[in-house]
Image 1 (tube, rainbow, N blue to C red):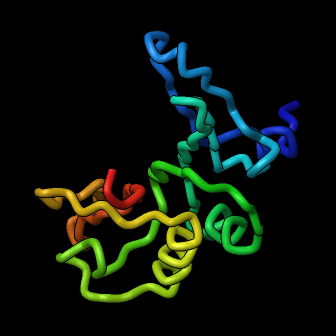
Image 2 (image 1 turned 180 degrees about the horizontal axis):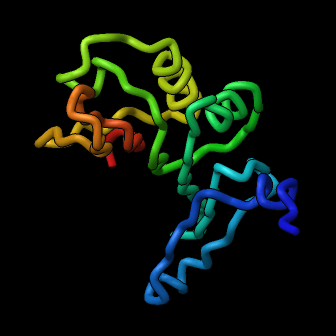
Amino acid sequence: MRNFSLANNLPRVITYINIRLSPLHFSLQKDIFNHRDISCVSFFNCSLIYFLMNIYSDLSQAALKYLRNTEVNISNVLIMTRDFNIRDSSWDPHFLYHSIHSDILIKVADSLHLELSRPTEQVPTRYLDNQQNLNSVIDLMFLRPNL
């Protein structure tokens, strides 16, 4: 019999680091964000520590709510990216509505000193089988300004 409580705790994000980058000493930081849908990886460069975040926020926005309610004192987050499952007119020109979840996401990004990166060509990142629903943009990237 399958243990569903164990399955519900398995991570749903992954971060791949190429072996050529091993001199930067990458390390998974579960002590900063201990959530199955958040991967926080640190690395060293020029004696400074930097962080990369990979997030999957499910339809109930569990990871986003966790980030909103968790106070952390980290700086030097360079990137926060992945699937936020938030459709919003702020980043999807074909979607006409605003979501309250996008406000929370922007506040979380601001607290980490990150800004939404706007691609030169906006394309959907979620494609639906249903012809009556529009494809949408739900994968986003937040970057440290001036990098």
